[in-house]
Length: 205
Length: 205
DNA sequence: TCTCTTACATACGCGCTGTATGTATAGTCG
DNA sequence: CGACTATACATACAGCGCGTATGTAAGAGA
Image 1 (tube, rainbow over the protein chains, first blue to last red):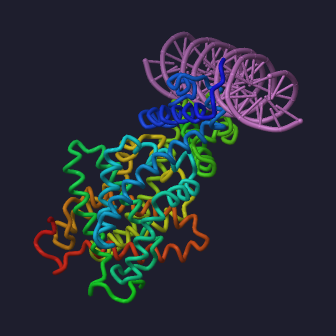
Image 2: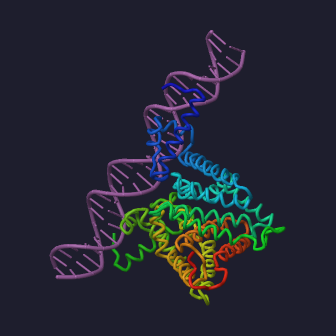
Image 3: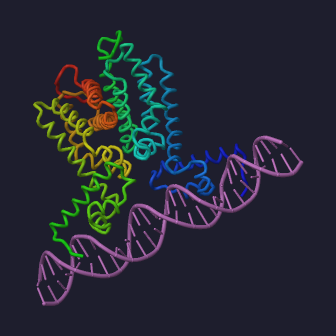
C-alpha cells in the first residue's frame, strides 16, 4: 500500500485515537478489540500497533486527551471567576457538569484507574487538572479563606467526592435534579472548610 | 477422579474464592488467569467453571465477600458509638482504616467498578454498606443534626471522598501521617454539614 | 440396588493480543 | 538527481486465556 506523509501520519494517529475514544466510552476497555478500532479508522491493526505500541498505550493516549478537555473546561470556568473562592466553586461546578454530560465518563472515572493503575492514573490526573485543584485549595488556605490541614488530602477528598457524584448523577433518571441535589450538598461541604472569621493570615490547622 | 460430598464441595468453592481473592488483590483482575487460580486451589479450571460460571462471576463473589468484611467492620464501629453523630464519625473512621489496611483495596476500589459495571457495583455496595451510610445520614438529617438536601447525594459524596482518600493514603510513604491529615480534613467536611443551631426538627433544606 | 444428579476433569475451538516480517514510498544526503 | 535510509503502514504468525462441550466417577435419593 501507499505510504503517507508525516502530516498524514499524524492525522491517521488522531483518527485512530478518536475512533477508539468513542468505542472505549461506549463499551469499556475490555470489550473493545483493536481489530474493530482499526476497521473503524479504516486501517489495519498494524497501523494501530505502529502508532501506539499496545492496547494500553492507546488507551492512555485516549484518556489523556479526554482528561485534557475536562481540565480545559474546568480551568476556563475557574479563571473566569472574580475571586479565588468563586473560582473554586465555579471549577467544581464545571467539573461536575462536564463529567456528567461528557461521554468520556466511563473512560476517565471507571476504566482509567483500573487499566493504568492508580498511581499512573493519579499522576496523569495531577498533570492535567488535579494539580490545579490542589493549588487552588492551597492558595485559599494560604490566604486564610480556607481552614484545612493538607491541600493534597482535601484535594483528594473533593476529587473523589465529585467523581462518585458524577457517576451517580449520570445514572439518575432525572439528571438535572440529581445534579442540583448534589451541588447543594457539595457546596455545603465546601462551606464547611471556609474559615469561620473570614480571610485571615493562614488557614492551615 | 473421586467426587466429594456436598460439604466438601462448599469447601472447594470457598478455597477457590479465597485463593482468587489473594491473586486479584495482588495483581488485578485482568492479570490473573483462571488456570493459576485453579492450580493454586489444587483443582482444574473445570472446577472453577463448575462453581462460578465465568471469570466475572467469580470476581463478583470475591468482591462481595470482601465488601461484607468491610461492612462488618464499619457497622461494628458505628454501633459501638454512643449517639448517631458519633456513629457516623466512627463508621467513617473505621472505613478509612480498614480500606487502607486491607489487602482488598484493589479489588473493591479499583477493579470492581470497571469489571462489574458501575450500577451493578453500586447496588452491591448499597446492599452491603452504602445503604447503611445513607440511612445514617438520613436519620441524622431527620433528627435535625444534619442540614442536607439529599441523603443519597451526600452519601455518594462522602463515599467517593473516602474511597479516593483511601487509595491516596495507601500509596503515601507515611500512611499514618497521611491518614491523620485526611481524617482531619474529612471531619472538617463533615462538620460543615452539621446544623448550626444543633439538633432541630428537620435538617432537610 | 438402581438411577439420577452432582462435582469435578479433559479436550477443544476461538477471539484477541502482540510480534515478526514484508513493502512501498517519503525524506535526505552526496 | 540518484541511491540509501527511515517511516508508515499491511500481512502473517504464534500463543495465551476464556468459555464450552463432553466425559466420568461417586454421592444421594427411591
